[in-house]
Amino acid sequence: MFIKNIESLIKRNEQLTKKNKELEKKVFDLIHNPSKAFNYQNEMKQLISKISEIENELKQKEEDLIERERNIIIKEEKLNINENELNQKEKKLSIDETRLKEREKNLSESDVKINKLKLNEDNNLQKPNIIYVNNNIFSQCVLPVNKMLNNGMKIPYIGLGTSRINNIQEVIYNSIKDGLRMIDTAFKYGNEEEVGKGIKKALDDGLCKREELFIIGKIWIAHRNDPEKAIKETLQKLQLDYLDLYLDHWPSGNNYADPSNIQQQVSIFEFWPKMEALVDKGLTKSIGLSNYNVQSILNLLSFCRIKPVANEVEFHPYYYTENLKKFCDKENIAIIAYYPLARGNGARQYIKNHNGEMDCFKEECVVKLCKKYNKTPGQIIINWEVSQGIISIPGTSNPNRIKENLGALDFKMTDEDIKSLDCFGKKMKFCGCRRFFGMNIMA
Image (cartoon, rainbow, N blue to C red; front, side, top):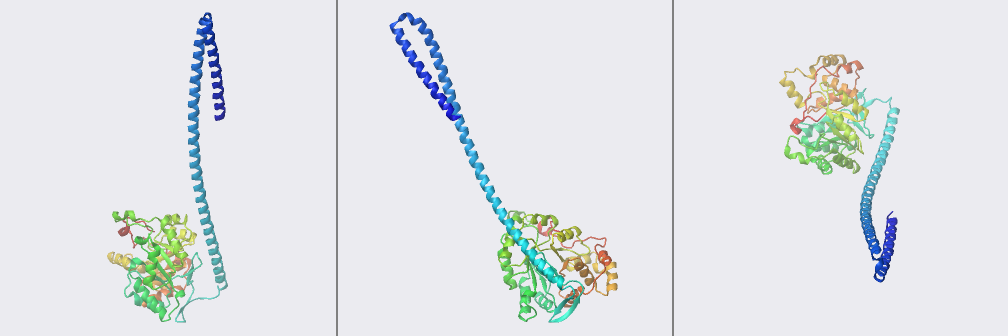
């Protein structure tokens, strides 16, 4: 189109040149033949008018050409911009595709490991579950001793919660001596060094090997910007080379109760890949959550490369979170129960303030089951949890209680008895988070 317009202008210019020559001839004739002046005058006016029209037309077409050329340049610039955006999107899609392939590969490897472990379990179905203490049989269990996580690892069903425990170093040592193999701690508990000393003494004395222990740690909200630094400090305090499970203590990177801290929030999209890197670097064998509700877990599962293996939450007959349990079971995310006996410091204070009206150990159905199975209230409740696939981590400094807790696996309750403990018709949560966040955001 542009070339045709140029050719049209050239043609018009040739016509104008021809008209000018005709005009020159007529001027010459007029000078030498005055009689023709009148006729020439009229023709001259017409010719001048025609020339003026042609000049205006040429001018207008020139302006049109300039405008079209400007539009073409603008369109070319837009095409270049769109091409750059397209290249960026293609690059991003390529990166996402690579991540997806890596995740599929990891999931495939995990499935292979799980299938192998399940096969081993199937081959050993006739063998009883046994808890050994100093190479001697402590308890021949009816319920399973360990639970398989979604990455193929095994975690003991019964562990020790270490929050607010006195003489923790001695308690850890005696717990391992008495057969307990899972210990739950956290930066926020402020006892990692003492826990580490107890573990080291037990290992040095040959009570067990490191690979026989399952150690859980947790990252605190103030450290979510640098999980690698946080876990290395935890490992140094615990005197360990790795953790078996590292949990995100709270489902938020911010202290909402402190307005000055709002700018320090670390989103889960930025935080979780850093947690995944800890597994890649061998600093922890697995990663998980704590106090996450269904919505928070769904958000994480929408993009994570390494799936969380567990969610540690408050769980007991007074706080039976059925929907969370069903969701975690469906996604193969283990639930670890803290305050599993509806006891501990927070619960104990509540019971005291309410004259024992919500003491789980004194509930009629618990007392009835204690008589039926000849077990303690604690053993009944832990058995209820393990029967549903819940990992239980009661906290105690009493060595007799630890042995008692391990004895919760050597009997099996009927389905009807288990169902009777799902809810007492009362509901109470003993651990809140308003003091940290100014709102209740946890499971």
